Image (tube, rainbow, N blue to C red; front, side, top):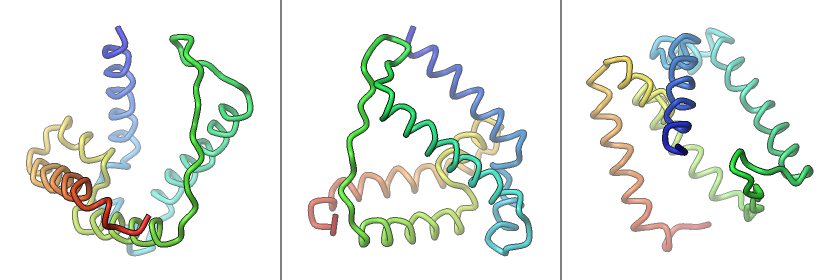
Length: 137
């Protein structure tokens, strides 16, 4: 039952991403060229809603749909981890024209060349897992 609810939410998220053109390479290119507000509006509204919902969950002792208490652990503060990670993420996003959410949305929409990008993201994640103990955290 849980897997099917995650699948439904994922499909809905993919449809919203595709219909809002958040998975469009052209829209992402416009954003990196500072030619359009479209993607900044989507990212900004996601940031505001994410912050509000996270604080609502942290301060309200909320439970999941299955009755489990939701706990969000505090993260260790570090400038290097976010600066280096953000630059690498941004470079990958700019080069590929897609970040992780739109990658799977594009695959679901039938754009098969995105498989190369997904493969690269999985390899990068694997390499990070191998090197994470040697990296500044």
